[in-house]
Length: 352
Image 1: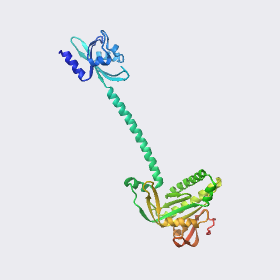
Image 2: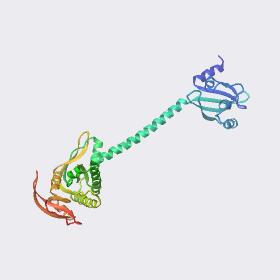
Image 3: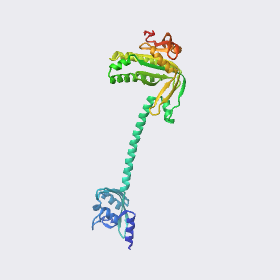
């Protein structure tokens, strides 16, 4: 076997197409099997630009002049599949004349893999963005169900430890005549009205550093002093209660549906925790909640009733009127006060 035949077998084995050209006219002196298989067998007198017209003729001339290597990528479509080749042309000295050596490497699979990687990366980035958006939606939902500090504990440990708070204040609002209103009104209108009002209440609660715990039908419950201790928790819920009534007053002036509410305030210990395993809800239990729930029943429409225990915490910022002692179910006899804004002291403070 000749040296040329051995060299050609070696070149076929490494999968590289090779051709040797006369530098003077770019005609072929030699080509191996892979080169002919990919680009066809050069005819007598055929030049490299004739066989591979996508090569830049000026670059080939520059190789002859400067001796620098010229590299390019070519695409051919012999059948249905597009093949990509990396082509390199370099100058060499042959037997008495300059020659150009053309090396061709099939990089189709490499480019296909790169394209697959790019597509996969794009898909991963898109899925990551969607997961981030979903995470944000879930976080917003959970923050609507529980305070942030409770959410952080839940996110970190998967559970929330029930906490006892020695002294908190609670505001409980309930609408007057809601059952009759809901019976004679289209449900979508009722829900729209409640959504509008409760959204405004949420803004008020946030303004005074309180936490809205839940709504139950037409009842609205918020608390101050948990999960973060607040020294002025009593005045915070009283400010919320006053603003609730002020908002309803102003809203009633321009809306066809007139809303009136009774509000009870409570003070004392409470326990807060996440309730449920599959459907999570943060809830508050204890004397402070029970007092607020009981006292709103004793309030006149558009009035606020609180236990006398809160009197001295509120007297500097609110108008206070004594209501006397009342028997409270499950709590015995309790002295109550009526709380109102100093801007509006004309409301009736009589017991119903």
